Image (tube, rainbow, N blue to C red; front, side, top):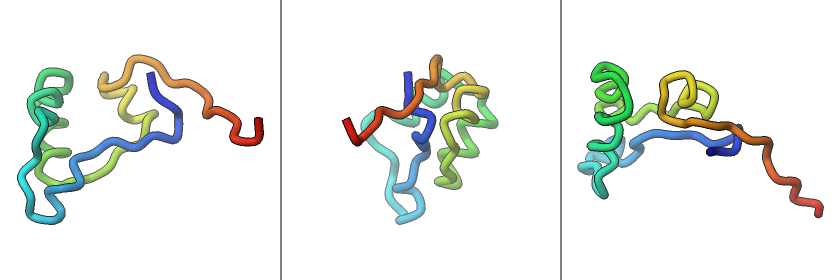
Length: 68
């Protein structure tokens, strides 16, 4: 479940760093090989709606109000 404003990606590759903490393995388990490689190799960020369409997220929720 994620807020509709959430973004997903592997930004460390843009800095020349290797992705860590098992994120790449989870992407490969939950996405098609081409979608996972796109995120892993480019560091591109996808928005929550796209992540849901790809199967990375199950539910999207409205953002919490910050004025409460």
